Image (tube, rainbow over all chains, first blue to last red):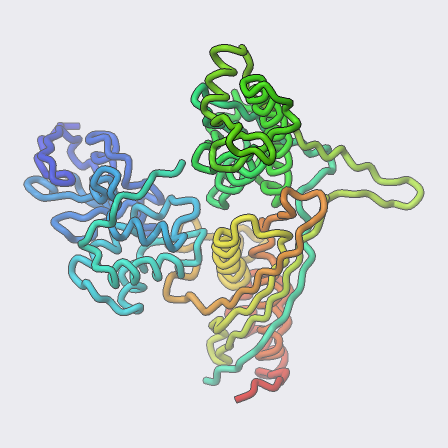
Length: 167
Length: 343
């Protein structure tokens, strides 16, 4: 299959890759760009764990044609933290015990970021709506909803202070 | 169309571990030259928190800060043998193995410190902050790091320990039929409120109230997390999930998440949880662990609540609208079993 050159911004960094024509964005991010933070779940857009932001909007990367990101900006979870400084959403997820196995967390965080970037003070129902395309098997969703509401309350744009990493 | 409210109750005793063929778990603990401790296990953390809990147990037993303990579950090929993370055995089995390994490592650590301080190891104690000192004389002390350095570079010792927790295979007594398949039981009781639409057979869960007895809750926040999340999974099994909706006929089974029903974030209901702590004998620091029990009582509670609401006794899972409607049809309509719902 013919290779297609694609230039885009990945978490603020200029990136250029040759991708297979017809390749999906998730594959290109993971194998091409080496960013393993978006996860492969179902491969058909029903689980949401591959959610990334394209120009600030939540996209299911497994269903997104990689070629359409030419000239656009892609954000993934690996760009959320600033070195050891976690994003407020990550801190709130941690404090609320909003992850167990962690497989849905990448998608949940990006879906939540897409929401808070456009609606900094969402209602509980708006949070539920925003993550309704993301499946979680472990938590029963409530800790995730609470974590997103807490991040909104704290002003999610502010990065939290450095948090010691615990293994 | 009328919504009928129903309330269901269920209580369970839940076995921890299994030893029908012998049930061993091994743990190895060793220090790095700078006095950090590595716990090596082959049982894995699926998200239930086993790494956190075994880390707590190791730090407590060694008498060192939890920040100085690392748990490595990287490779079951090269790690010590373990039966695995299943049968609600993690906290109980791995916890006991880690205690044994950490006790042995602590013994060597105190011997190494005793040699440096020129005292008897039996006169030493740890402060849990990274120091070892003579009982009653905190100034006669050495840090765990200096102890590890001395052991490694001067004494030629490894600060290490081996632990195994083995529950031997339990045979059936030919005289009495008795056997001991499990080590201890955890307990739970659930009251679940729901409503059933008598036109569509739809069920809407309204509220869950539960009490769980898990021995000592070694990490209360993670116990709560597991119980609340697991209850959701129990409700999901009770009402939605199946791979063979017309079992034993395999037809019409779901093949992906489009067809496999699970509740979403919009169906979260209030769950009021009480955790009862009764430290269990023979369990690590009294903790039995919640395990699979987090999901189990929800299923009979849902079935009982559906019966209470419309008088339909479903004896197969999941309790689908179709089964409820067929049941009501057979009964000649909804037959609420009645209860005092208060105001």
